[in-house]
Length: 292
Image (cartoon, rainbow, N blue to C red; front, side, top):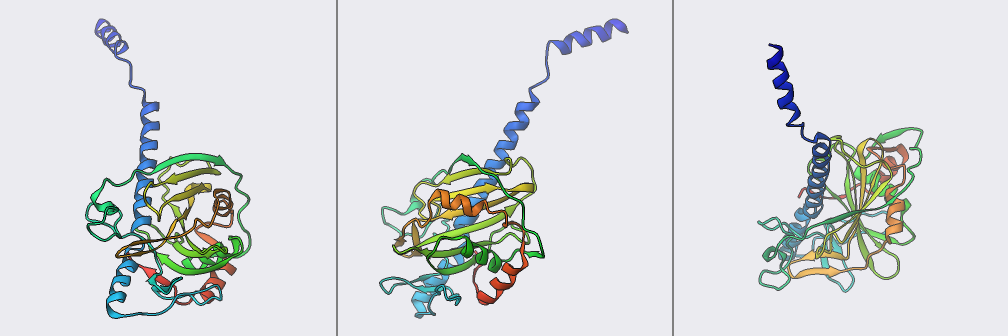
């Protein structure tokens, strides 16, 4: 019996165990990569329903006007510089192949006819996340997120407020949009608060930059990782409105440094100071919403 056990040990010694540590690390990295791709797909699809409203509105006639920083959120349509009318949620629509759409069929720039661009994500900084807010907290709402975002933005006129519902997001995880004009014309920003609790997230304070070539809605996205798996994504677009003939170019209205400072603010979370939630509900009683 002892001889059998000895031969068995010798056989095991000739076949060492696989490097599970590397396998686990690779699985974690792959999981994070897949989650990021899903999030980017949700960002791109978030405004598709409002884009459809634009098509319906163009067929039926003007449906309304947009908003400015006086606290009067507009409906699905905005009056843009030059008199054109567009959706309050600028985004390419989704094509059957999953590539961003929003271009007239047959044009050279129709991305549905090309390979979907690959996002590139790199870690660009590490910042210190301060202590979270004290006092009375309330579940984060889209209106509350917009209220806080406006207070953190540099001076300028804001408009184009919208709630872009993101699939898979739970309570207190809004995905919102606004336009900011710092004097050179309006540009679009989108912000998302998200937590999946799947583990494998970078250390709090890690800052990532994701770029999607050829996608003006997702030109640059800053992600700041907070405690307990929370991440704040702030997207800087270089177009403003989707329409059947393409997109309306727009300036990038934040530098990467400004975007990092906003996304790293410790006030962000699935709960916000109650004052932001209350004041946001008053400022945006009729927030344009996309179910796409």
